[in-house]
Amino acid sequence: MLVNAKYCLKNPSMLKDFEAELRAKGLDEYYLVSTDEAGYQKVVGPVEGLRKISLTFMIIVLIFGAVILIILSSIAIRERKYEIGVLRAMGMKKGKIILGLWFEMLIITVLCLLVGFSIGSVAAQPISDALLSEQIENAKIAARQGGIMSGVVSGIALGGPVERELVPLEQVDVSVGIDTIIEIAIIALFLASLTSMVAITKITKYEPIRILAERN
Amino acid sequence: MNILSLKNVTYQYEGAKKLVLKGVNAEFSSGKIYTIVGKSGSGKSTLLSLIAGLDVCSEGEIYYKGTSFKELDHDEYRAKNIGVIFQSFNLLTNATGIENIILSMSISGRREKNKKEYAYALLEKVGIDRETANRKILKLSGGEQQRVSIAHALSHNPDIVIADEPTANLDSDTENAVLNIFTSLTRDEGKCVIIATHSKKVASIADEVWGINDGKLLFIKHS
Ligand SMILES: Nc1ncnc2c1ncn2[C@@H]1O[C@H](COP(=O)(O)OP(=O)(O)OP(=O)(O)O)[C@@H](O)[C@H]1O
Ligand SMILES: [Mg+2]
Image (cartoon, rainbow over all chains, first blue to last red; front, top):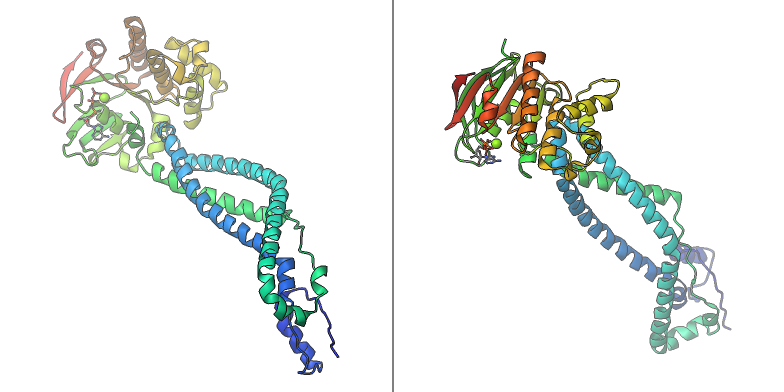
């Protein structure tokens, strides 16, 4: 007699515990506990792929973003070197100038964040949908290619009918929570402060006449 | 007491081989106009920037009312005690004349009730009308910029006024008007005015003429 029972677990990391629990409850060694890897891949694979893509994107954006930010803020500050020189010559205190520039930088960063979040909130869902459906297509193609080889082995063990019922996750809700927004904002403000501070302190450490002399 | 004393002031630009100033000694007092003459490149602007507290001497010392510059808060000194008319004006070019002057008054902490009217009046003295005062510095002629720069230097009512070629871009009528302002500053308000210049006419209004030659400041003549 062939007995076949199917359980759905929330998380693949529970597999070991699940088997241990079954054995503990007296499941005979005669019975095999196996996983429907292919089915799992079919359901979750596309989302995993999406996750990989977005992670790669994030790393690229962060690295390039940081480099660009440093370059841009150095240029921005250097453009204002003359202005800084004039203000210093008028007797404005260094600290006040630094604070002023920093404040300006923060305002610009906040504006950029607002724009970024607005664009993000509008564009994230369609983009992730597009990426996800691409992933699903890829997974289908991969399944068709791999199917012939693995079909014999896994097909019998799993029992045929199962495959038809499995539908990949076609919807991922990408709405961003308030926590994430705050986190991103803090990181952005911190990065902006850091990069602008590097440039500002570099300039304000000179005597005012040096700053002015470079332009005249 | 002398308002400014220079003791053995020596200056060398970073990376330059030659000393620009070699042990300059001088005394400047209130109520007098001084002119400093000398060939181009002799170090007039350099000396003025040291007096203005915009740079520090390599050696020697400058005293303001008996206090060494080393103990003086340079920012405070620039904001309150000295007005500088630069050879290259050094105004905020993206702001208007009136804004430049009001800014400088604010930095010095002046509490005029109506800063704007005070600034307009000051500009009018150097022949800048309200329309011109409300134009960006970028959009002013060289002579207009120079006159805004003069008003700017006087805006916080400093004890010392330093001017680097203040009449270089002016016609002779405007030049006369500016020189009259300098004379009145010293005669009527007891300020100390120090002018670097090539112009004989400017030198002629001075109480004392000094010359820079080979890094030394030498007394040339009384008026
Ligand atoms: N930033 C600098 N670095 C190196 N050398 C400088 C610098 N600025 C000026 N010098 C040199 O110092 C010397 C004195 O310059 P300064 O500007 O004081 O002359 P000046 O008497 O005002 O001349 P001018 O009448 O042309 O305005 C010059 O030889 C000049 O080349
Ligand atoms: Mg000069």
